[in-house]
Every structure is written in C-alpha cells, then in structure tokens.
Length: 274
Length: 314
Image (tube, rainbow over the protein chains, first blue to last red):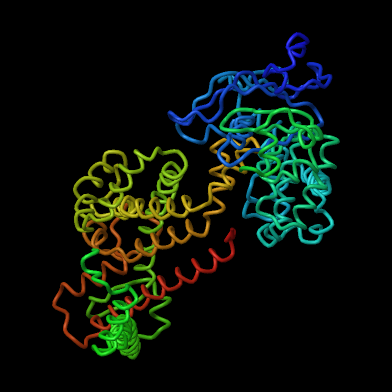
C-alpha cells in the first residue's frame, strides 16, 4: 500500500486515494474488476476502496458504467442476462463475486435505493416491515417498533404516521422515495447503495433526500450514483469519476471539484462534455 | 421521388389532396354511424336474449310456484303423475362439477402461471404458451369423450364404487379444460407487474420464490381473481362434457361418485327429446337457463367486488 502511494502518478494512487484508511474501516475493496455485457466490456480494471461512514459519490456521463458498478456491489447486475465478471470485490473481507457468497445474505447487509421510487403496492406500514418480515421477524410489537424507527430514520414519520395503512402509491414521488429509504433502513443494513435516487424527484424533494443522506451517513456507509455534479459536491466525502468503464479519478470531493489531477475530470466537471 | 416532386412543394401536394378529400364522399361522417350500429347489434342481441328468458320464465312460473322451484328437493319433470320441479338437484350437480374443476384448475393454473412469469426462460415461455392456446381450442365434445372413455375407466381402477356416469370425472376434465385459461390470464397479470417491484424486493434479500409469493402475486391479485372467476363461469356454463360424461340423474346429495345432472345438461336433454312447445317441461328449460344466467351474473358481481377490494394499485 505505502509503496504504491509513493509513486504519485500511478493509477492505484489516483484511484484508492491517500487518506489514512486501514483495513478495518474499508467496507468494499474492488480489485481489478472487469465486467462484460455479452461482448461489450462495461467496466475495465476498476480499483476502488469504499470507507465506512462516508458518502462516496460516483459521477460520469451516461453509459460510463457507474450504474453497472453500483449494481455489482449487491449483485443486482446478475438479473441482466449475459453478464460476466472477472476480478474481485471484497465486502468486509469476503469476495462477493464468489459463487459461494449467498446473494440474499449480501443484500440484507447492503440496501439499495433505486432511481425511480419503487414501493410495493401495499400499505405504507407493509412496505416498511416487508424486509424484516421475510427474514423471519413476526412479532407485531417488534415490527411496529421497526416501522416507526425506520420511518423516523428516513424523515418521513411525521408525514405518514396517521396513515400507515394507506396505500404507498398515494404518496408523492419524494415521499415514496423516502419510504423506499425507510424500507431499506428497516433491515438495518451496513451499506446503502443509491442509484440516482433523486433523478425522478422535484428540487424540494431532492433537497429533503440530500439532507437525509447527511443524517444517514452517521450510521451507514453510502454509495451514490448521481448525474448531478452539484449534488455530488454537496453531499459526498469522496468522488469517483467514471469514463468509458474506467475510473479516471477517485479522490476527496473537495479536491475533485477544486483541482482535479486529470484533465478529463476537469473537462467533465466544468461542463465541457457529458 | 425527386422526379415526382417536379417543382411542387410538399405543402402544395398536401393541400391538393385535402381539396379532393373535401369534395369526396363524407366517409368520415358515415364511419362512426356504421361502427355504432355494429356495437348496437351485440347490445340489442343481449337485451333480446334476456327478455326472452324473462318472458318464458314468467310463463313457467304461471304453472309452477316459485316456492316449489326453489325448495322442492326433487327434479322429476318427466313424471306424468308426480311431476316435481325443484331446481336444487340440478344446482347441486352444477356445483359438484364446478367445485371439483376449481380444485383441479386453481392450484395447477396458478403454479403454472408463477412458473411462466417468474421462472421460465423466454424460450420455454414461447413453447408453452401456444400449447395452452391449443388446449383452449379443443372442442368440448372431445373433452367429454375423453372424460367418459379415458378418465372414468382410469378412476374406476382407484375408486371401485365409481359409476360409469359420475360428477368426479367430468369435474376433473373441466378442471383440465379451464387450467390453461387461469394460467394464461394470470401469467398476463403477473408479467405486467413492473420489474422495479421485483428488484425492490430482491434488493432486500428476498429469494425469487418470496418475490413471487409476497410481491408479484398480491400485486397481480385482481387480474388473477378475474381469471379464476372467468374460468368458474366457464365451468358453470360447460355443457358438452357433463352431458356426455356426468349422466342424467338429478340428485340432491354430496356424492360425487354417482350419476348427476347439471343445469346445462338438463337443457340439452330436453332440447334433444321431443318435448312439445308450450308444455311445462318446455318452459322449464327457460327457468333453468335463467337460474344459470343469474349464477354467472352473480359471479361477475363477486369478481368485480373482490378485485376492487383486493386491488393493489401501482
């Protein structure tokens, strides 16, 4: 580790950044990850480290592989037929790409919030307790507690506490998205993956979700894919810039948006392309 | 192309066409009228059928009291001295057959639809769905003889007391007949549940089976219930299979191994025979037909109520 850091121009250095991370607080360590959709290579030699209780933003133009990458972190990518991977992603020290890693187990530790709010067509309450329920928690009292705690955690409790039994599709888009976050919090994950969570929301709802993320990062590690560079600048601690399936630069957000190392990063964040 | 343009602009050509259209026949005005007439034909036919049913049924009740029709436990229309018109034996025959058909069709149909929508590869789906449609296209008379000459003898080997004509065998065969309908329509309902919901559930660590049972099935509930009700209506109205394989003994009991008669089979029996126009027996088929109609109407109301009650909107 120390050796690679000395060679300041090496790719490893640029990608894994130099802040004092030790093995303990590394959540995800991606090593030489390659991914293909059929014959199309979507990810090329990705090396990234995600640190505990930080917000890591992934930015880049459409088709650069950022969504693909975040979906490999909980193996949702496997839903797409014809996907092949090579390399390693270790989550808390275990390679999740190993077939012996049970995907259901991984996904109870790594929650995900999607681009479009996707609550179940059930009541607000049933949405939140869905996760705990399928994992065997049946006690009504415990479920009630989980529901309240999760909805509070997602800053939506006050808006829905009087209508927990109403259909979730009666909520506004922003409320639905926070409900989806509550649903995710209900199983107390370790990491929350967010795939452009505000791209379908209006500015006020976006602001609420962003405030929520600041709150959530105290207890969770968050990885967020975003199209919106201001959003990345506002909320993240570190930012990775993806381009054509490669990580061009991965560093502290403040540095990324003030003096990036790579010319392509600068071009992108100043709006010269993308 | 370039030649045809010959110096004229597209706008000029369009306006020429518009001119000639305006001068031509006003097809635009006739078409809606023609379409309305075709729609009206089916509505009027339905009204006509219902009115016929009602009038002839009233004539029947001039001769037989409604009380006897609803409460008498014997259906002996052909007895000259002791004719008895109690609908219950026929209703029980219909219910026995329909009940057995549902017991066969709902579990198999639902399981098949879950397989098709959640597990089957595109290839498997492409092969299986047309087979369902073929099954649905087999004439019911073929199913009738399948019940009588194949299923009944097979069942007799396992159930020694089974009569040649019974409720069990046609019930099972009607179940087989309506299974593809439930499977196919339920599969449509489940396939139209947005993938985002499956992803949401999978991302919470659900297994595929949990997603199917706890998310997709409830989300598609109204479509599934509709398919079952449609299939039940079909089973209630099914005529050929029961006429061939169920016998013609209207009996009010719980026995499914003996000969029965359903409402539809009775209507067939009367219309085959040489029953004179204007006799009580002749009018009785309208009363039975009316009862049948009320049952299917009731099924439709139940379907609407249930699917509205359990609809999970998304």
